[in-house]
Figure (cartoon, rainbow, N blue to C red):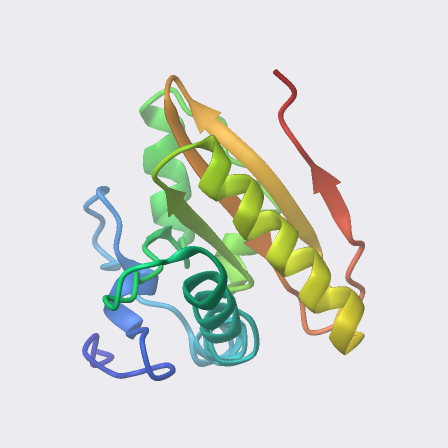
Length: 160
């Protein structure tokens, strides 16, 4: 069993990136390859996103953290999601530890996160696979995925 308190980077732990509301017999425990992918996302993307966002948009002395709704999802978690009436992709980047869903307090914060991630990609020449603004009712999140290779740079914004 993996140590969920293990730090993947300065501000992110394995527990945060494997947290799920679905209880499964596998405990949503990622294989080593998925952990390595999560480490890469945290160290090369989320830490910089956090720093840039705080520098650009947080006026108080207190920094804001980035909250991950979901990172890794095991096959069993995906099956539980289907039973709950959701329609997760059978080829989801989450199943390989290549995706995170970043909670946003509102649509404006979501667009800011997306803008920063897109600029980071352009500036650093790092590719991403998916950058989507998603919502359910009035709840917004950014789905962000980076594969070890064959990234497609798919972007989807909500209009209106």
